[in-house]
Image 1: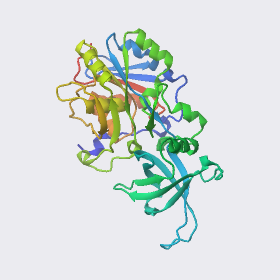
Image 2 (image 1 turned 135 degrees about the horizontal axis):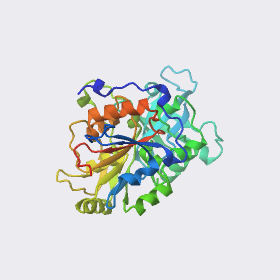
Image 3 (image 1 turned 90 degrees about the vertical axis):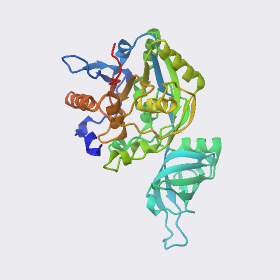
Image 4 (image 1 turned 30 degrees about the horizontal axis):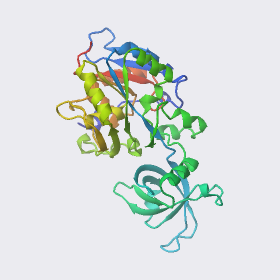
Length: 373
């Protein structure tokens, strides 16, 4: 497969800069591959109508990760040696993966100008006399792919509090390029059920849910289950290889508790469908499921890369937003519902004014090889 196989033209005005209000008033494109319908298996609905497409015994799986304010602005101290002129340099870090109580792997700009041993002062515009202002770090390593490993002067909970005080919500580049992050994003870019700190990007399909919608789903007889996958900044990186098979995903940590695995296996055994809310939930469940179709407890990193031809083991239905051209996520939905189906679905979405990306509308995809009843 070539990267060009997953390209499409998206008008700039289709990119949503703010979410729908209320959250569950967003549009929902229902996609049933192979459905013998005049509309080609595409149905325009609203997110709050989601219970209409589920049935008692189905199991909804959510990612309960919580986005941290992972974008930090700072100054690199002037170097006394190595040809530096002694003046500080502005830097930006997006924390990507925690590797120790005091260490994070980060994407940094300008990363190429940083060297091991450099000191970075984050939150430099704050009162340096107060403890909250002392968010300093040392560059301890430069990793493959340009990632920077930072050792902070704080550790554990103290570091968490300092990052929360000085960090900004890491809005996706396609939003951040058009407007600055503001106080609204602290709430908008977080699911209502988020509880496990660790993501630098939201599991965006979950942004559509309200407490009222969750209650309506439970009233329908649909069970709700929560897993955790901490989304890394690598989700925003473009695919750079023309041969799709040569692309390598960044690893992300995820956890499927034993009780959740047991409940999902029981739901499926009783005839229920597993409905993943978001590609993160789907990727985690697929990583936790064996070739025998049994979901097992999981607490590890996953770098699963799903492209057309993949045989799904766990997910029967997927709720997800509309994704970037040539992205790994558009490849995933093409694998799930079929390339031709998703091409037609996206053409329909663009032609009828659906809003794309993190703050955009949603879609409900039924698996291409799953019996639609």
